[in-house]
Length: 200
Image (cartoon, rainbow, N blue to C red; front, side, top):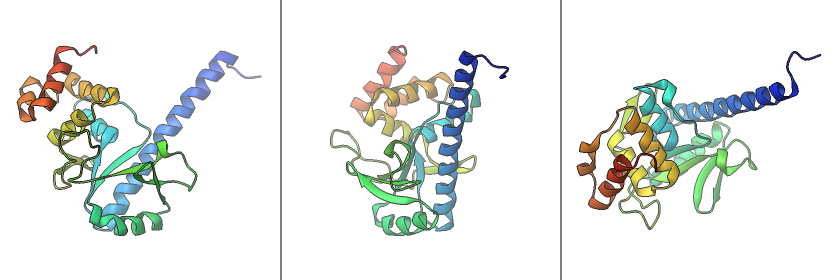
């Protein structure tokens, strides 16, 4: 007979599943970093994993997990990236105009490695294009987008999860209100709004 009650077992199973998902995301991220470095292809980790990397430099307990991996690349390098990532066991596909790699041909796109193209508009509604891959720095063991450029991407996207990521960075003290002037007026206004109304 189990030492856990049904409720405790359900909670434990849920916790174990979350941990397993987190571990798989980090394994995908590390395989991607290792593969692209070995191939000599420039890239930068962006998105939630880049935010987590920066937040962890101040408070590792404050990081927020994400299900996917976002990588900034140069479009001209895509053929070489396909070759290297396929050799590493990933599967390339395109879905809704998003280029990605997944663990298997039918894996969920939400758990994929999503590619964004440097210097291009991620969305026509964005105010500025994606940063250049040269706007990257080594933090820990990862090639991540520089903080200022990462926040610019988050301000452009401006979804609730992007706002929450910026609030996480504000909360741990990575940025303050002096950063507002670093961005074009509309993006700066979005950042100021987050300082003014951190609760949403």
